[in-house]
Image (cartoon, rainbow, N blue to C red):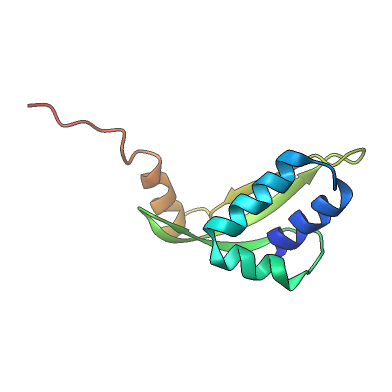
Length: 105
């Protein structure tokens, strides 16, 4: 929810950005949930939190989301990390190797 509210705030700051408008239109077209959240009209700033991500191979992964910001601009980097030693950390490590193996013969 917070990410969509943050995107809405960004869209308000850059109303003439065609690529941003295209991205929003595409997300609304392919995701009913995104469209619902977008239509709610909430504007906000994404803050550090814990998120659960539904990975297609690993299932639900609960990750800490930390945000690194540049004070003089709009640049932000979101870092998702699992709790060390947790089942989520083990499954995320497995995701790093899934699909990299090949059967020979």
